Structures are given as structure tokens and as C-alpha cells.
Length: 84
Image (cartoon, rainbow, N blue to C red; front, side, top):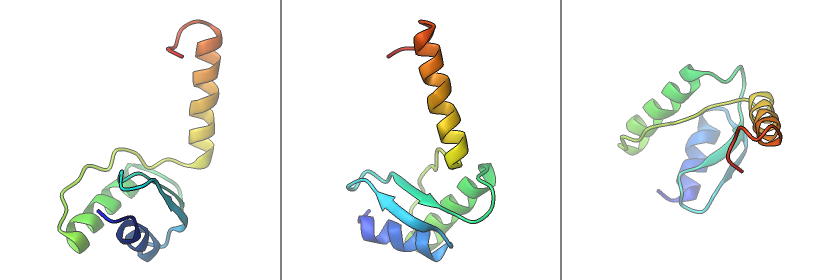
């Protein structure tokens, strides 16, 4: 899908600072309220409704959750328990 279309959809859902990566379908954005599985469900439903696309939405996480994930990955790498 064109990145402008995805950015427009996310902006229409109240997301801000939307960034997309080429035409990969990946996006990073800020959104009101907590990130959750419900947010991913809402996004998938909007893609289906607005663009007639049936696509999986794999993750919707907060900046804090993402930072924690990266920190834990680095910790596990330091302990030799995670792939580089």
C-alpha cells in the first residue's frame, strides 16, 4: 500500500508523528491512550474497512514497552542468552 495512504489512515485514527518505512507496511506513531492488543485490532479493522485490506497487525506497543524490550534484549545479549 502507498505510504501516504497508511499515514492518512493512522492520522485519521488520531495518531500523530506517523512515520512509515518505504512500502513495507511498517509504521511508528504516537497515539492517545495505552497501547494494547485492542489498538492492533482497531487498526486491522480500519485497514479492512477503509482500504478493503485483510492484513495482520502484529504489534502495537508503547515507547516505554519498546524501550524495555530493547533493554532486555541488550541484557540477554550481555549474558550470552540472546542472539546478537
